[in-house]
Image (cartoon, rainbow, N blue to C red; front, side, top):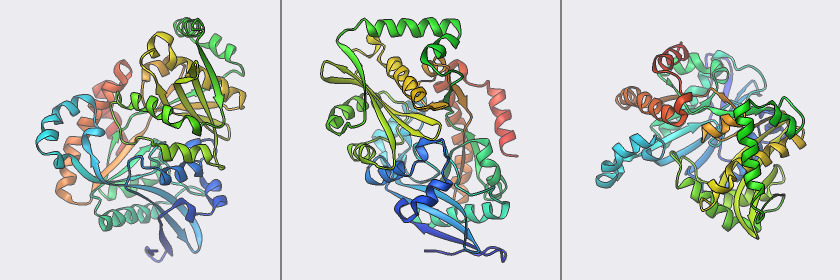
Length: 398
């Protein structure tokens, strides 16, 4: 436990090492109501699994015994840089990885949610002084833990607003991150959803559904219990990760087992079977009026021919509609098919710094360009023009 009083305002910072140390009703009151990735059970599952971080922590900020904010932290003591940049940068780093692999491993602290959109959990609007105390507490923690690089991960502009003054004063710089993808439902049935799509996506969707339905050996089921399938699901998931551009987190059996058994989680698994063998899945989580297609697995032996990717997403859309959801989010990958589904891109940002001046200057010079290149490659024709990207970056730092 640590305390920090700022300018006589009576602020106190506490450091907790597990989400279990936060009362369940408190978490549920503060977490975004319609974002399943902020369900307490997701953080419990992260702590049970070995998906990337070497540890987790939670900073709580109180004033006069009243809670002001909660910020989850993920500790990476040995993060491989070549796992979080784009394909072009990874190719450039390949000789370094072969000859001097230790140079590509850096200690890093991520603030927010490793698997979802970043937030500071707060009962109301975070004040400027509270933001300053919180940012200072993050940097103090990073120094004590020997984690030089600090990142507020995947925050929307609105979620960054209460922290901007404090981040700027602490020499953070902002870089666009991969956008989220969100499909909002303007209809109550899947047929109405299809009919509302533009002409070309609508024709493509119906063609993909017909091609899948012509494969009589394939069927889609929605499961509440799936622990018996975990080895096969992990094999399908690994096929996707082997083709992924960035692998900051890789889910494991312990994480999926904790999700499967989590009484705090509303979760269903969309599974495509070939006979009795799973050949695709999409893990779906639900909270309030929101749903998330959290992680996917595919058998690439028949994924393209049978249009598995699209059809498990169609099944998830049907499922979310039936559950009364108003929107569903999907992961920060495969933007072209998700835009064809009707998804919108949700702008997100990294706020980054280093606790030492020289590495901070190097990061500020090199990382924005590398991450912008990775963003452009991921978005393809949907990426903003270079001059628009620079203008957004300048505006975001004001």
